[in-house]
Length: 211
Image 1: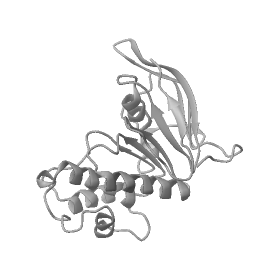
Image 2 (image 1 turned 180 degrees about the horizontal axis):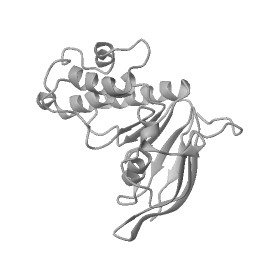
Image 3 (image 1 turned 30 degrees about the horizontal axis):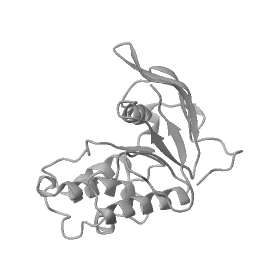
């Protein structure tokens, strides 16, 4: 999972920080993330882990410092479809089915080659629930419906905020498998998690948040 040192980073932060009401949320930080690499973002509650991922996704403005994507300043419009954020709010329309939610996402960003809504929903464990309104699904099923976007959309960088929440042991193992396959294929991911995370194939890069 560790990229060759000579490779140019996909994502680079230089002196990155964020302020809320003129108070720093986290101290200035520098890090790089390369193709094929997975990073675990660590820190206490309130240390800014979610804020960091939202900044990287372009949902919050950079407070101070610089973010670069593929060597150029990161711009949200330029990275649409290339960076995929999955947060505590799952981004699902409650009255739509998992299949309909995926179709909306695919209409914006396209699909990975060889995939479709039916195949990824079966792979993610929602066979038989493809056309059930999301509001009728359990918390774990809703999480799986959101995770299905990882399989369908052709994003290079996954930003996953607590992806293991509301999942059982099988679901947790599935997330780890998705991450491993994504990085093995040259993708990259940043993950926050309060629990102990185990990734096969080596230790992830660790990014520590400090207030």
